[in-house]
Length: 400
Image (cartoon, rainbow, N blue to C red; front, side):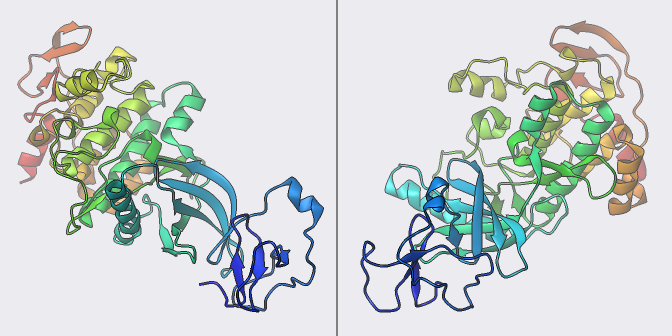
């Protein structure tokens, strides 16, 4: 809440309002000094004129106790700024504010409710691979805001485009294990993300070593276990080209829909392509292709172990029941392809049973451009994905 002596102008200047009603054109304005806090005395507004040098660059905005800096990005319903928390010794944070598009009033209400629900959902999840929420609220002018840790890096899409080449297998598997661990933490808290895609997988410098690690961001479309339904029947939220087949069919997203998205992100890491980027932007054609799982297999783009391709295809199977039982099981299947460091990290988090048996080499008898048929009763890899009679299922049955 703002002090009773002041209000804030849209350009970021404070106006002295201690003497009751005021007129914007008649009151002196002043910039807030760096040491200013909302709990301290009012800044000196005795000089009516504003320093001419400040007109050269727009002043930073103040939102609650957060001094906003440069804009970092903007999405369909939010704008993100780097910011300084004035109460915690200049701690750097990210502040996301609600920016409503020009849509119907009922849609604006729905978007507002989603924004208000995002911090509530994030507060349920405490995990190193999920962005941490620090604060949320409403400013004096009614602006809703969400404060999270400030992430330095870029998202998976930007990183790979700038890199100009797919990741090495071990590097991609490392990132996929991070993603599996973060998504599993969401599911354990009753949260389904529903919008996992390369843009929402943020890569930051790992706290140990010189590599990268994953932070899952943007829970604006996430669904909590007991949350009230906000989406009208027949409307599926998300980005069409990253839909799972069940979402493309208009069905509700489940934990296995998130698993499909993890497989899609791994596909992107290893090939540099989205599964359906060869299609034009026609939504109907795209939905049809997603429903039929009509995308090139990963080995169309590069040489990969067949067992690794089978894992990706199974995670992206068009039938949810034929995917892995959980994202954690997907991570276990990917474990042999990760680096020794990530294998140990995974084992530390999930225990000694995290190590699966190595995958046997399948015997491929015939291939086509986008089809693999394997005549081996141990592995069933088809155009639609790896089947349930895989080495991993046999391994799990032996453990039972």
